[in-house]
Image 1 (cartoon, one colour):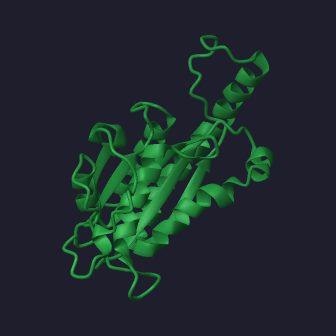
Image 2 (cartoon, rainbow, N blue to C red):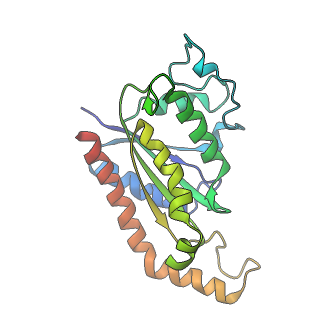
Image 3 (spheres, rainbow, N blue to C red):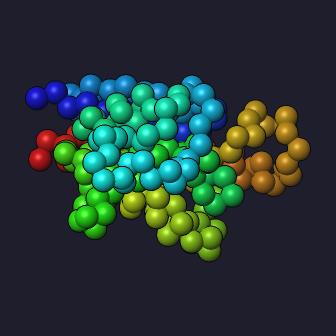
Length: 220
């Protein structure tokens, strides 16, 4: 049986740290024999989150677990519903996943909720879900002080509805590249430079291993 994965880059940057590390996840998936497809959320046009129309919850609804809104995101929602593995990548903006990722999450998960059987998904299969977060936060202390494992982890755990979920949190990655171009302090710039030098290879290994783990779970 061929295992299929959809990798979603939620970053507005198609070639930033999030995309690069998702590429390593893809390598791990493919090394384990998985068929992959990578998409950028920004390519699906302008879309928003759930509008609470409740069309997916009406008795006798024909939505079949897909958001009723017919916009550019709908084809992706239909495709994700059929995949074995879902990988979502997002930078962290003001303590949360970016708005596009949040909108996707609402639009994908809410139609799956079965309110006649609380806590159960209408999805007829299990999807193994992996999250990858990239952020400026340079170290463990600030990460803990901001409660990121709880705030960011809440979105991750929401995907347990359709299968299982896990996340990687990559810290000290800046969009202010190349150095010297942007108006940031030299001390902070040095912190970002040191973090990337000391940890990026480790981040790549962790991302690759995530891909392999997700395939292993999908085969169980």
